[in-house]
Length: 304
Image (cartoon, rainbow, N blue to C red):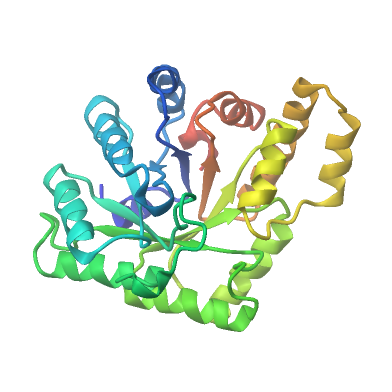
């Protein structure tokens, strides 16, 4: 279903993010959990795309499997780095041919194997270039839906690490929306006040598309450290860090604290009329299911 129809149908969207597993055992484990995710009846799910396109085939395989063997509506990620126009065009043609309606268009990271990767030779320097290409693909009849692909882009409530000027950062986001993005999904955050302030600044900048809040339950201290390394600027509130510190080496206690914090984030977001919540699941269904249960909901419909 086209993302604009999803937002029209659902007063608040709830969605999940998966990543392609690296091993056969990982695939088996994830798809054993898919039934748990399906039972929550999300508005859509997204599938990540490895740095420099490193999971290109795995992402496609996972999107196809979700599309063909589940009731979930998959939104594949697509990134700029290390891709030619021809390669992106072929990927879009393949998705269009198989009935995929939406794409998450991202800047992306260079491959870890090339630490000094020079982006100056990339055809798509920025996410806006990818948005324009996807929109043009649809306008030229590349997708069976006359609207073309629905397009999502990333937002950064706490600031993009590569753009210290916050006014310029919102100019960039506005440009992506003007180029054809249908919604914005944020990077994970742990302080809702940062998100609410960012939403107000988006409104002042004239950004009128749905703004979906990215929430990630912390399930281990290892996950916390990994997020700190990869997120490039995510702030961890002192109150959250204190609670995790009290847990010591008790891994189950850390998981309970992280899940409780995310649950309170979701409750507050829902109370404030958020347009959508996107769960960074790390392919684990337990924390997301517990959040729904604690909020008194058996599925997404009960939270709207």
